[in-house]
Length: 332
Image 1 (cartoon, rainbow, N blue to C red):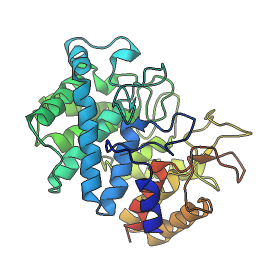
Image 2 (cartoon, one colour; image 1 turned 45 degrees about the horizontal axis):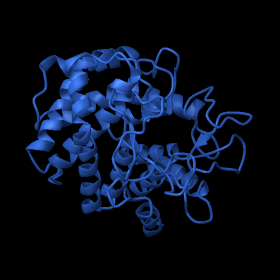
Image 3 (cartoon, rainbow, N blue to C red; image 1 turned 180 degrees about the vertical axis):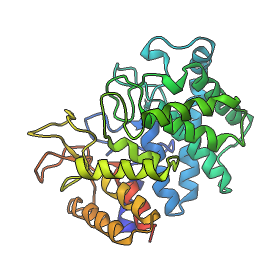
Image 4 (cartoon, rainbow, N blue to C red; image 1 turned 45 degrees about the vertical axis):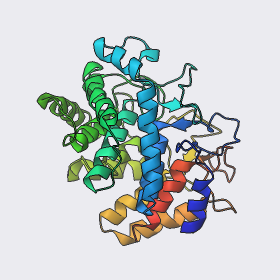
């Protein structure tokens, strides 16, 4: 199953190093590259020790940011007031150009995720940074987070929806700042401000969302919550969001709604990994079984299943889900 999933992921990588969110020929826009999805894909490939692919992907993301450095400079000089002034979350994987359409592209968690993974890989001796150019753009990302005041900035969050202060976005930035702090200069209070807001919000995701699958990221990969916060997040997610074929993003989610919220497959291996790291093998096995049951006959994990249905949407496979399954397998 591991080799099958790795082969599936291989087919989603462009020559640039960037991964499509789904199949390259899908017509939903998921043939494009999201910063966040590429980070989670890299996490799975790192677990499988595919370090050369991981390095190529992370360096491609740095190249994307270097191509748009002028925009980051603008945002540092003056706090953005319009959505288009923020760093975009998705790009053309061939040209590395921004996708210009108006949609929820204020996704601060994507920047935090990138900082976190680069810092994490460098810490492990997997060299991503090539030059002073890479270090310069990483330093500018710190100034960017400072300029947008990430600790109380209303972004669209992991799910690209309503602008709110999201715990998962702030947590990603806090984790990223901590991990990258050995490589670039970080103002002393920049992390503290994020931690203060995070501790006020948790275990909620935001003012309107008591429970959200995005909060799992604060447990894995970021590991920045207390035991009490972790237990509360898991209890809420399992009680209110875990379903037969996947995990709801949040209560009332209208994306692909059909007589109920859609069930996302990436939540299943995500929970499996968390329980493995908590040394709970029975729960790990339970969620890995559920993940396998959510696969189609080709071993692919779709983005989601419609509520109370065996029908999945057209975004199949979803690289994010497939990569977390790989990471789950490598926990054994």
